Length: 156
Image: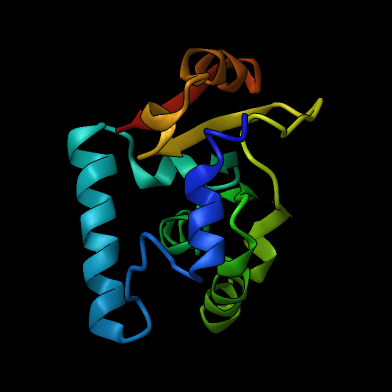
């Protein structure tokens, strides 16, 4: 397990945010929403309207720029992120956009160590499962966290 967390350890030791996405300025935010809309609505065929009122768990949310879009679309979020040094930015962004209410829970754990009895409508892990030696188990774990008929989104 230590091997899988070596990147998180590296990011924390070097105070490095591996996926910083600028969204603070109006144009940056609009561009980011457009990119996420293109991904969800055009490529994945998931309308943003489907998110409203649904529970979403996102593993590896980093500093929350993508989760912020989900919150803006009305999702209720559980965010699981082991890299605690990105938390101040995540909290700052949700406060700036007045979306704090959309974060039901922020958990500082890895996908491997996270456990709950709760079930979610949508489970998301973008861009990192491929580096885990336990990736197949983690996909199974994600599936077990979804309600029947739930939606899983995994990207590499």
